[in-house]
Image (tube, rainbow, N blue to C red; front, top):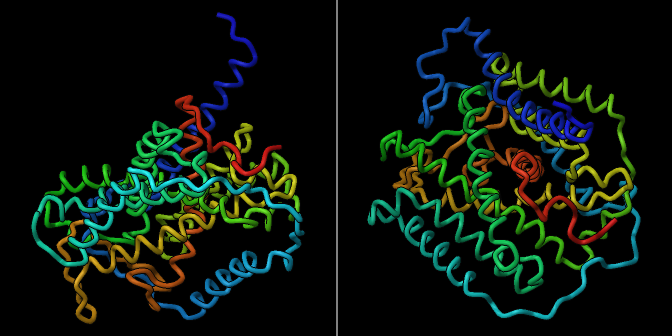
Length: 398
């Protein structure tokens, strides 16, 4: 049967995206398989992880280096002119007539605030709702923020304009986050769920999959909310142009594929690659096949989409860590929680200076995760041919 060139090209692109995701799954497993000579420790793939093996001792040098990186990123946001960004002299956001607070906002507020009252009040009943609390908490917060977005610019609201895409992103998020639960095995549990024993393991797995549906849709709401801040996007519209060659992209792909393979051999030294490599692999792959990603506008010096997506999960992460922390009862180093998905961290080198449960420099890991969420959804939508409104920046057209 004759296949035309466009069909062959589409097949190659689909295989490229599918192959990249498959490599993220397979390479660390292959590395661990070789490291342990096919005989994994008995608890290696236990889920959910309840305890974490000992990690490398804290390193002030490592901590200060990461703090320096964090401060540098902060400086780019606060003083963009220092890094070559020019003022545009325009505002790409046009003020829209203020809309009334929509019904889904009230529903979201009841879900979110009601759940927080149960969790932060440390109630033990109703047990089912306490055990599965993160689902209404995540989705309630998403609906509430989307309602705020609706009030600021109703044309950008997901619930009002494209609820099917919100649901589709929620479905995609299940695989997008569970991938990281899987990768957590290979760094020997950087995060654990010490109170997951309150429910059977199979039930917790179902809860984790269902609950993760609420971890990504909110990112796209925050992304568009940032676009409604007057002048915010325009601060980063005219920066340094970056348009690397395809060969350089291939070299980077090889580097990040290799890092995924090596993570099981060096779980302490390479734990940060858990957050960086999947994001880079997916973004580079999408860029190579011609799909829009937050790095695509860099070729004409437009950094606004990248700067917004980078900020999204840092904002959400602060809320997540706060909501998680106060659902526990803290007595010094001892924590008691009736919330099955309460999480704690065990991170090498930097496990001190905590903000909530998170070591302060751990928040740097939220920066690439916002970009990852974008790349994951675009890849998911591309493979399933789902129309998406997030394949370009919504505040400017080229």
